[in-house]
Length: 376
Image (cartoon, rainbow, N blue to C red; front, side, top):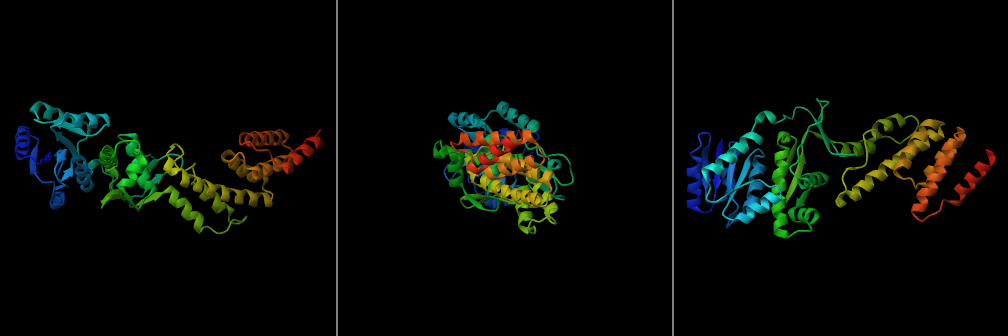
């Protein structure tokens, strides 16, 4: 394995080099006391492991690790430090491997065995972008290649690294400042520690998505990150695009809308309760409800009662307090003489409104009361 070493102390640098030379499968191809990674871009494709001092005068080791993996997400970072507290904090946040100075051969051996067993570099794991990657964010987050019926399994190191990826995906194509990410995801902790968590989480994301690097790239730009997608179809974007390009809804175009609305598998990231998604979640839900109502109204106007009922019922599942939709359902059930359903729908509406400290519209109550009298 090809190794690179960074340490601002020349003696520590040479000592670690000396210890690594005792391993036949380790080849130290570069070492430096200065973290000038941009001057060595040609090396990163050939590097397997970087041993990195966490405390250097010009930069934070965690930040440097994140910059290195931006060049090659397959690179494994091993931090080296003289301070035990850094290692403790790192393991508490499930970070990368840490070695305490002076590094013994025995401890190095454990690190190298661990690398061989759980994270060895393999180009066979990389998926070539010859097909489209489908990323779905309706209901849950899933990945699937267009030439496969199987979902790609992504193992997230921590729940925060997954949330960070979703935040960047939420802002796909935009530059997101690191300060914004820290405030959104680690607001409750010390700022310096929050930035450390951010750098480690970016590293974890690149590791988790390394097989998909031809499709998903996270660029480090100035004081922020930008997530870029290539050969990717994001269900949220595709659904909105198709709705925008579709003709007006009428009985002749409604089949097109049936196909488009099938892309909406559930609310945006329904399985996640992040505060920062609530605005767009509501907007997408409103967009779905608006078109679902237009479709239901169209079916009702053309006497396709069962289809109208199906769409109104779907709307009520999301908005049980929607009086207009509930009333349409009641009248359609009454048309089909589904007495039990009329009664059930009114009672459900009454319950939903009561939970909001509201009362059912008097016109609906009057209609329901008269309907009850007439069926006796």
